[in-house]
Length: 362
Image 1 (cartoon, helix red, strand yellow):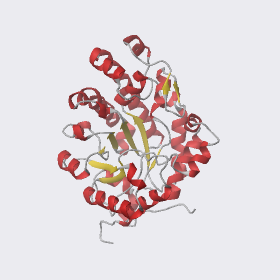
Image 2: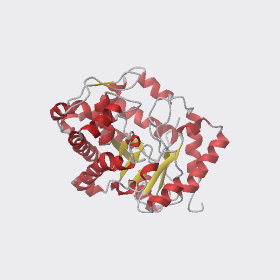
Image 3: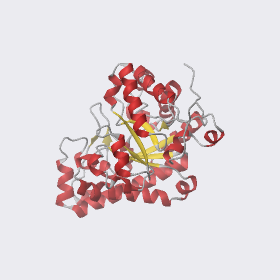
Image 4: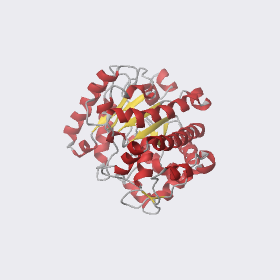
């Protein structure tokens, strides 16, 4: 299959990638599209790589991370690539052992008290995670300027949930016991996570990432008050540290903040300091725009399950989201990651529908 080389046609677009212009709410000739987990198990080519290496081996082998990152760009022509990695790779350098069995990540010794928090360190990401930085460099070389590369990290609160629960959870009882039983200790842990994440994202930018996304996958378990105190507060800390970093500031790197389950938080969500707010599928994009105003770009928000629709029905869903997003400050994406059973041809329908909608009348 031939690789896509879908460069924007205008001189201005050629000088600045479509995705980055949308992040900055600049004019675009069409809405850009990328997809969370776009390098993943729905792709036969990904599964072929995965058959010869474990997930962790793929994350830690720059050539393999580069290979699978480029697959969806070559096959579908997305407008941005996202680094293949995992949000939990920052935990082992902090002092937490993480395993990745098929059922999901497992932390061997969860953080449940102040002594365990005090033992954690804020690592040097360049020294401790060199394979990530090398993957960024190899991906940038492999992309050869076709599209920008997005780096990413887990947001402090989401990392805390994994560290405290020891993996995924249904009720997050250990996390909430820490937050409400010992808020001082909770903030000490959140601060270490935030400092780690800020340094890690800055290192990705220094290695070549052209935008970064902060994933707060589990912030939606909090009340609005607690979201501001425990999730948003420390996301702001990360974003402020990034803004102050010379490499990030010099390049004007856009920051995306994605909260899964953002609907209860729309009054405070735009105060994160991010350039782009990710929107899940549980609320209409137009409603979010009315609530947060025009000062930030929005990213989203097709339900990943909609990719199981027949093609005509899927196109209608995509068109409706494009109408809501409008011609400025919208990046098309799913409301969460693509699911493994998804037919790649439905992904192609989604991408082609987005690309067919032109905002300049051509």
